[in-house]
Image (cartoon, rainbow, N blue to C red):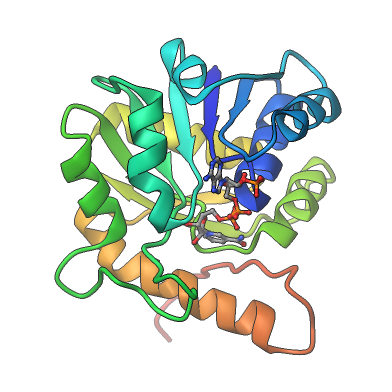
Length: 216
Ligand SMILES: NC(=O)c1ccc[n+]([C@@H]2O[C@H](COP(=O)([O-])OP(=O)(O)OC[C@H]3O[C@@H](n4cnc5c(N)ncnc54)[C@H](OP(=O)(O)O)[C@@H]3O)[C@@H](O)[C@H]2O)c1
């Protein structure tokens, strides 16, 4: 798959690297230094390369949107026409000091994004785990340990199938939560995960797993 990374920071840098190591063709874009994008592409190995947001979007089968909420309009502007594209967003609609959601309850960041790019297929994914756990999950999945869950939601069946495949490539067990509207619940859950990951003493390398039990 050809994957364009829009925002090559903690999440985009790591997920892009994992996608490349899983065999995908990755373009890293949108950082404040082109040196950083070159470095990420070199370290990711495979066919990864640096590019502009427009280059990342042009040939992409999927785009990962991983920027602070305040940068969404700028990066979308730079990416150009995204009609028909699959956009996986891990971006949470946080306020400037990252202390709270500025879109919640009656909408979500993912739904607000879908309104901005009405011709694209938005899927919300990867926003409920801290970046620090991603490499650990990826390498553990090769040892065939039990996989952690990862919730995702969206309105387009094809885009969701593609997202589920990428979630599996990273080493998670994808949990389909339904339509994009459910991002109203998954985004606050991402904040809960942040509290547990960064608020506790055990460190941020944290994932979660849903289990089902038969009724007694
Ligand atoms: N970090 C997590 O564990 C985590 C978990 C769940 C969800 N999220 C969400 O995922 C999204 C990305 O988070 P993150 O932690 O990956 O953020 P981040 O590390 O700050 O990455 C954002 C990227 O945007 C780039 N950027 C910022 N301003 C720019 C500008 N003016 N011009 C060009 N590039 C610019 C940054 O460049 P530089 O590389 O030069 O800084 C960086 O590459 C956020 O919406 C966050 O809420 C994060």
